[in-house]
Length: 321
Image 1 (tube, rainbow, N blue to C red):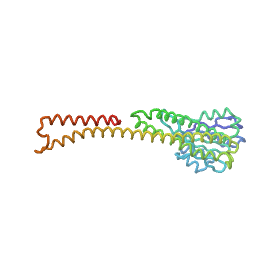
Image 2 (cartoon, rainbow, N blue to C red):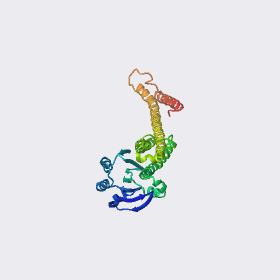
Image 3 (cartoon, rainbow, N blue to C red):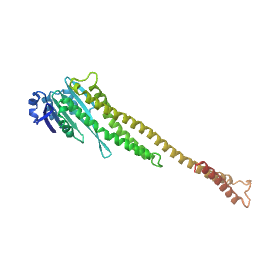
Image 4 (tube, rainbow, N blue to C red):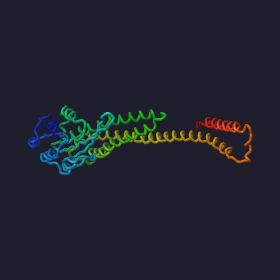
């Protein structure tokens, strides 16, 4: 679905134009066209391919979707894929943005992303001196918006991890904590899969050999790269903390189970006294000593109680009961 199609010249908006007139505006000097699509159909992408002369491999990736974050160079144009990761309550919503960038055009194709990029367009139009840099600045603005949406997710992961750490040594909370930690680990991996490939790709847009279209905007892409690097560092810290917390919680579960086993072993030892004495005096032989003794029964019971009480006190003192 077409969201908007706008022509810009010298950093200022000329007009909202129909798709059929794109080729006319592409011929104007210092002019570029910015088109935004959402959940585009194959026919819409094919139409844009004809208008802008997009590379067939890039078009195939954009139409198919589910691509790894990347930036590829096709002649004098770039094709970028970014993953959007946004919070919806406690759940993560993931989407994909494919961006075609040429000397005089920008085409963004958004799929499954909860938030749009109308704010990015409004911001760019408020800064005509930057928009004058052309289509590469639009790519930066879109990329910066996607990366900025990662920060609330990282903040959420860190806050949730702190909450779990506060209850880590609460009796009986270990099993629940392990489940929550694994859920956090899955979410952090989702964000990491969006960040790390993009970090590597953006690193090629500044310093050294950069694509011609991005040479005047290297400083801006360096800023995006710095943001991604910071996010990656925080994700590494989250991953290490989660792994440590999981090990601690599993150890706490093992300790709890050990405490239960000790209690069961202590009670089994106490009741084994009854079994041993009863088995001994229960042997019905004629020559058994004390068999005919008048006080044999109460003496046997008293002895068993005394021995069991002694064992109980010993286990209690050692912390087994």
